[in-house]
Length: 292
Ligand code: SF4
Ligand code: SF4
Ligand SMILES: [Zn+2]
Image 1 (cartoon, rainbow, N blue to C red):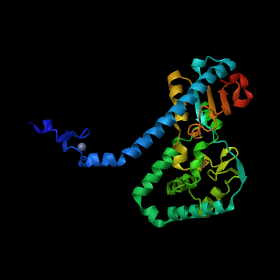
Image 2 (cartoon, protein in one colour; image 1 turned 90 degrees about the vertical axis):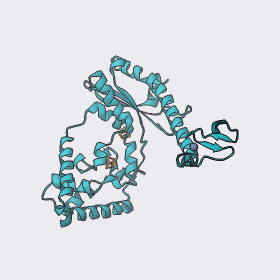
Image 3 (tube, helix red, strand yellow; image 1 turned 30 degrees about the vertical axis):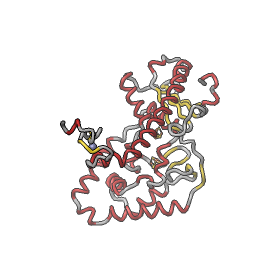
Image 4 (tube, rainbow, N blue to C red; image 1 turned 90 degrees about the horizontal axis):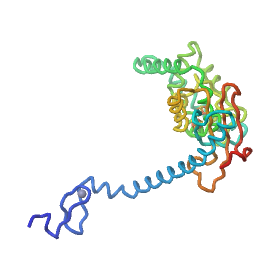
């Protein structure tokens, strides 16, 4: 009898090693798999639930897009469309405690940038210069049809900027200094603090004002300048496929994507961008004809 035929043994279903009946496999990979399996299952279930919610919403908004396109006199197949989250902002007056923390952080970063040791670190300076060049290249004005996604959403991703202090890092300040040679430390500090809005979005980045971000691009972090959520990226993909970037329809939906269920009302904003008519913003609840 070969060991494989011996009823006292069984084959581990994962690593195929022979192990005694009733015993757990002791191969490191199998031990780890057993240890992490519940966490992996949980993550998978969560991912599947999220994907199902996204699909549910896509099905509903997909039925809205053709109506919006037709109402604008366009062929629905020719109009890039995307569904984005909704920041659903509430505004509050300035929060001096949080602003003090931000000022302290900025002072520390500015000190680091002006530290002679930083200027002597050639490798670091070369990285800052490369980032500054990149920022210059990115300066071209945003395509309105792409901006439609963020106009509809009103900055859901900027909520992450609350705990991350607007993502401002030593790179951000170093790039700003390179783009504005001759600026003194106190001028840089004043430049940032003077951009804090009178009213900011509650539970969001301090620079998240009523009209969106109050920092010009050259003062924003590399994270803020380069980040695009998947829904916004999908507009780029559609533009490429359709070969046009002059029109777009974006729908922002409250609760999308994490808290959207079958029972959720389709509340949000529709932003339509058309070169002739410009940017039109409509609240969905005022368009019962467009409801599914
Ligand atoms: S990148 Fe995405 S999440 Fe951020 S503001 Fe634009 S649409 Fe909203
Ligand atoms: S700095 Fe501007 S873009 Fe960046 S998180 Fe804050 S509000 Fe958003
Ligand atoms: Zn095994």
